[in-house]
Length: 362
Ligand SMILES: NC(=O)c1ccc[n+]([C@@H]2O[C@H](COP(=O)([O-])OP(=O)(O)OC[C@H]3O[C@@H](n4cnc5c(N)ncnc54)[C@H](O)[C@@H]3O)[C@@H](O)[C@H]2O)c1
Ligand SMILES: [Zn+2]
Ligand SMILES: [Zn+2]
Image: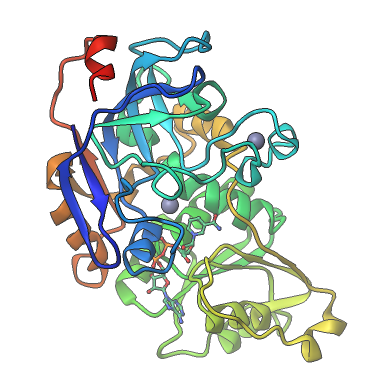
């Protein structure tokens, strides 16, 4: 089979790798029908995530079809269409029992394209399959559900829910990439009074308007704090969401928030940011951080099924899975290509399950 293999910083190749095979009774082999690329994959390619060893297949977001299940799997069967998301759950550890799957201590958590081979491939081995994947409801296409594999639950859980958004709130989201836009989309479920999007790129701010931002601020040209103070009678935002991942934007979020307000950090940070306790201590501000758990995925799936969420707009560019190298170039160059998410579709492949013997001969 073919897969996108990480070769060390700056190196990735769509190449032949051994076929996947069941390693534990709780595994399944999934044929990848649709996959996508995440900003985190670009971080990995820059060498920012050293736990990813050269030789690892990248990718942690996909929709596929089960072609083989391990002996312990009883609730899923060959032929089932499933969403394979960025977080895997052992289902047994303390954190999985609490719904904090992102913190799984039993071998799950964020493992695909990180600690084990990922989903930018023709086939993938999915551990703990019964407690980790979601059956795709009939009538929904791959692209309807693909963005549930990461950006929607991330923005919703780590941004909107951690930030305790309420009807009538003024919410500011700093960073209008896929995560910031997904925060805007899911924030609308709570009817905020006003959503303000802040970004340096006008093209991203245009998208923010399309996704439902009421006010947009280019903080390369305008003073975002002054603008938000003006909008809120000098108080500040009820909630500011950090969706970039650099020190400046975290500090900006703490300056944008009103006394008693909330700052929800979603960005992945590679450098220390300054916590201005000298101004914050007296303001009763709550700051939250987090890795996505994906405990809201079933609810978000229901909202998509009922057309209350329409995430297809994230899929701006489409490629055949085999053209993934070109897709990476387009995604990495979003400033020019205006890409949000690229959708990678496998060429039609026969749906019959492969024989166990064939899988065993790798
Ligand atoms: N916490 C989690 O579980 C989790 C999961 C997935 C992604 N993330 C992180 O969320 C962040 C956002 O992801 P994304 O895919 O949307 O990233 P992205 O790079 O596509 O978007 C970031 C946006 O921020 C804007 N930006 C950059 N510098 C800025 C500045 N100084 N002021 C205002 N805007 C600025 C860019 O123009 C861009 O539109 C990343 O750090 C990503 O790693 C976190
Ligand atoms: Zn991701
Ligand atoms: Zn666990």
